[in-house]
Image 1 (cartoon, one colour):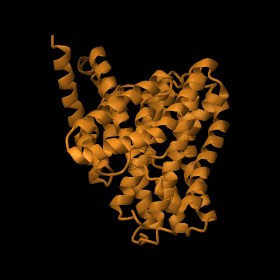
Image 2 (cartoon, rainbow, N blue to C red; image 1 turned 30 degrees about the vertical axis):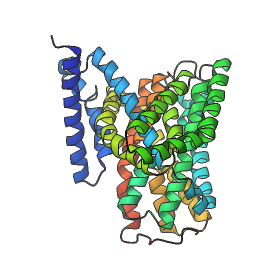
Image 3 (cartoon, rainbow, N blue to C red; image 1 turned 90 degrees about the horizontal axis):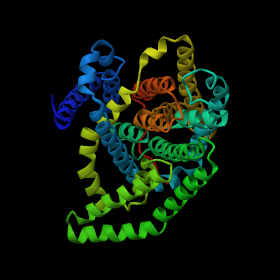
Length: 413
């Protein structure tokens, strides 16, 4: 019998092979690597490998190695959200503040309204939400899941298309950033208040506000000191210091009842732009994206049973959620952009970009499953929604824009 260490290394070899291969196939049809990895995670779970080769799946993903997979995946998404936070640019808001506020506002309000309309029906379907879930909590969670935008993927599409300095690129990035921050805040409130424990909710919300206030206030002064120290020394001591802060922030936000990713995300926003941030990204991003995130995708896939879609009640839920997710957010963002004077092509492109959910969606629903907010059936439905909305983003955007990509404009526009 192989040791847990040997089983883990074999497991990781299989995960990396599957993720790289499916990711490579995805690139052949114009999809980003992350889409292939999301699909690979599902294929390694009970929907394919576990269904057709149950003994092999059980031997490969033992209970002990699943626990290691979970911890590695949590570290991966925590560091990833930290890196995302460091890409967060407040100057975008000053450039397109009014239009971005309208687009992001519409992209939040309409999904939450639709989530609220679906919630009374969904709480009656067995296996979707935890027993006794209140309609308001179901609506808020579903609204956050529909409203979230894959900001990193949005940024990647904009960079790859050469739109970084254009009106379209700036507006999309600003609106996507506002959307994500608002969705994470709502999720934090849902997690804090779920279960009806008022005392726990007060601790979580109060602690989260205190943590964000400290990190985005006095913490920034301390981080600037570390950044200057790093520029003078050129050693790894500053990196170690930042990683210590990351671990403490993740521990604190998890301990107060929100989630570790919030600690990393807020710390990333607080980090000053400069050589230290660039060095951290250069050192951490490859290992995080190539090794740690596939652990998270696979752990998500192990919890995804697409066979639940054979139940007509769940299938109708999946169709409704998918339609609401695509049309609700896409149409809302398109309409808001048009209202603010954007031409139809730009508005359609904004709607397409804002509809991408990707990894951010998986993070939200994994948190919901882990905290007992949602059940396995709704988890599977939302995984499908995440994959489909991410798959169609690039092709829809390219079809809308085609050769009519905008040129760089005055940043003050």
